Every structure is written in structure tokens, then in C-alpha cells.
Length: 249
Ligand code: DC
Image 1 (cartoon, rainbow, N blue to C red):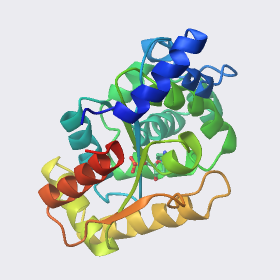
Image 2: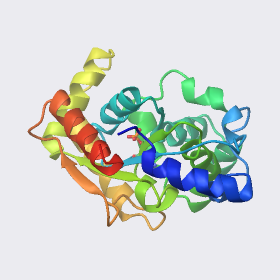
Image 3: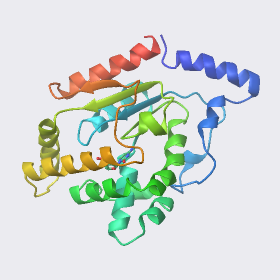
């Protein structure tokens, strides 16, 4: 069975009737943010398929998301980068809400976004409702883009894309996540201990879970993927299997 088959049927029916797919309604037109990007330009003849991946810090969401995107030919958005870029600009002295509202596509490619310091700043700005609001349109436009999209973050299945066809909640024990993140950071040249990484993750997870605005939690209809005992290949295979199940393949 071809990818998109179920969604195709629905979208094409709607397209014949109305001239454009109805899922376009998911694009809110209120406050455009993340400027200088063609992603906000809606394609009215496209077909969509959204994979939403949520979970705590360093659980493997990014790896699973990138690999799913490559496997199915979809675009991938690491939404943590939006908050990291906003947090970084706050550390430079900007007001957090202003930073989010004026975020540009190129800010997501800035160096240094992966450091623990920027991660903490990201977690802090992410608790501000107006910051989250400023980033919603960009994420929903990305999710609705032609050809399928994978988004990973904390609130993708619950708030950004509650209608996503596939929802995964990727998790692992604190110790496993800290070990993986520590190896990554050391490989990237960071001078940081395992214990510091563990404390950093726990602090962020606690803040991200306890905040009132779009807290970290699995969507009611998410499939939980605990990667504690899995290799990357096994985790990716499980995620691919879930997508294929939904697509009827
Ligand atoms: O995925 P990450 O570790 O790069 O995210 C950094 C912080 O950004 C995270 O601690 C919480 C916040 N975040 C969020 O609140 N919502 C998202 N969809 C993605 C990230």
C-alpha cells in the first residue's frame, strides 16, 4: 500500500468538492512568526501526513524523527530548536516574547544552540504562554506542508497537531538519557560530567512537565516507545512499524 493512501482519499475528495484541501483550515492566520520562510506559504493542492513525536529531553526523539522523515520522504522539524533559538536570544538580552515573535528561519541554524545553558534558557522561555503562541503558526504550517511532516517536541501531539495521523511518545530512563546526552556533548567538545547532564535533564523535565502552558505529557492517543533497552535501529524499526500500521501497510 502506498504512503498517504488513506489521507489521499480524504484530501482528494475534499479537493474535488471545494477546490482545495480542507486541512488548510489548520493554518491559523493570526500572528505570523518565524519570518523569512517559505514554509508559511500554504500550498492549496497538497496532501499531508503528520507524525508527532513528543517526549522528555534526550529520549531519542530527534534521531527517531530524522530517521522516520528519511524513510518516508517527509520533512522534519525539531521544534526544540525554536525554543532554543528564542532562549539564546533572551540570553543575549532580548525580551523573550519579542525574541520569539521576531525569530527568523536562519536563527535555527545558529551555532551553539545545543549547549545545556541554551537548553535551560529554552525550557524557561517555553513556559511563557506568549512565547508558545508566537511559535504556533510556524509549526502548524510546517505540519501541513505538502508531502508529509515529522515534528518532534513536547506538545506536538497534544497542542500543535492534535489531529496528527501518528503520535509517538518517545521516552527512556533518566540514567539512559543522561548517558546518551553526555556522550553527545563530550563528542561535541563540551566539558561536562555525567552527573551535571543528569541534573540538567531532570531539572528541565520537571519544569517542562509542571508548567501550565502546553506541559510535557503523552497525548491520550499516543503510542509510547520506551527506548531504554533498545538500540537506535530497534527504536527506529518500532517507529516505522507504527507508521506503517497507521498507513495500512
Ligand atoms: O527538545 P529540546 O531538548 O531541544 O528542547 C529544549 C527545550 O525547549 C525543552 O526543555 C522544552 C522546550 N520545548 C517545548 O517546550 N516545546 C517543544 N515543542 C519543544 C521544546
